[in-house]
Length: 179
Ligand code: THU
Image (cartoon, rainbow, N blue to C red; front, top):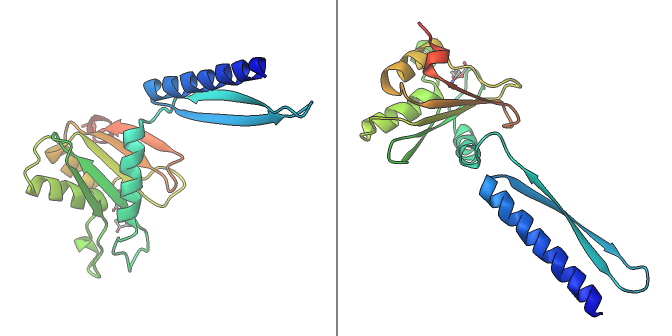
């Protein structure tokens, strides 16, 4: 029994170590508990796996917020919902979704709503823009939005996601509007 206790303690410590490492590198942790009772005694083994995500956890949080806002888009004409999140120099978060109009050119895109909300509240150096659509490929911002980003958020890191955040492009206005 002392040996079993020692083994379990060791394995638990190992698990703690993996969880700790996962936190440091900003990855996620997966574990598997395996119960092996050969002689009536249960041995518990832990297998740890540290997965370093390429997109920062913070960005994924912004995208889950963008997904919430996306639900509230006003899209009776296209039925295509877009959500956006903008983060300014003070870490303040602004959201936006697309709002359409029967006079189609009066439609405003999600990212412009979020950017205008931020600017109107005093933001002057937008750091991050996240946009999520309903396509299989990451969404592609329209020309007008690229122009607005160039004017009002030239330093922003821009993240463009597909419908389920399985494909996210990290870009910026120099790539989206090079000339
Ligand atoms: N739309 C956005 O809100 N953002 C984009 O980046 C692309 C397009 C909106 C405009 C319109 O309401 C609908 O998506 C279809 O084009």
